[in-house]
Amino acid sequence: METPRRSELREEAILTATLALLAEVGYDQMTMDAVAARAQASKATIYRKWPGKAELVVTAVRRRAGNPAKSPPDTGDLREDLLAVLHLMRDNLVGQDAALILGLMIAMHRDQGLAGTVRAQLVDDKREVFGAVIAQAVGRGELSASVDDTLFVEISSAMLFSRLFVTGEPLDDAFIRHLVDAVLLPLLDHQSSAP
Image 1 (cartoon, rainbow, N blue to C red):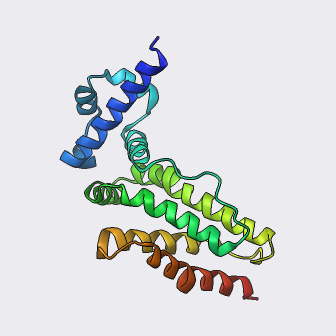
Image 2: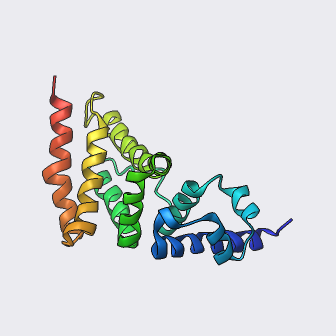
Image 3: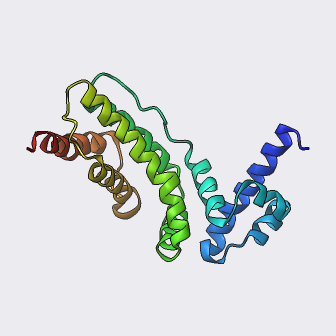
């Protein structure tokens, strides 16, 4: 049995090889055989940890992005909580390779298994964090319990993604404040006050 240190090094080699191959050949052309060869690991070692290519890719991308905050900040104020979460999301996105992320999105469009895995592991993390922020605000009486966080999560993620990967405009603190004050808080207020 491998020592924890050796096991961690093996896992890191596999995830690094996965990201390198994704960048070189794309998701569709990447194979588990190629990952094993690049990482100097057996396919059995890879399959013990990841049941398939989609799960391996999601783990590699998530590792590069850093783990999302599972427990959102609770500053006692909805605006400050939103700013804190968006800063964390921005910092994770900024560290990403744009070509890799865009390639992964294209592959998701063609491979429903990959799309389902990515949504379940990455998108749901955002819903969980924003859902907790909204639940905290509901608990403090800042929002009504009728607020639906689905559209809210999509808008916030899309705005950050678009700014970073599409328009190339700064994704700075001023933009995040503007996004919270001009878009997200009015959306939540509107939903909260709707009959």
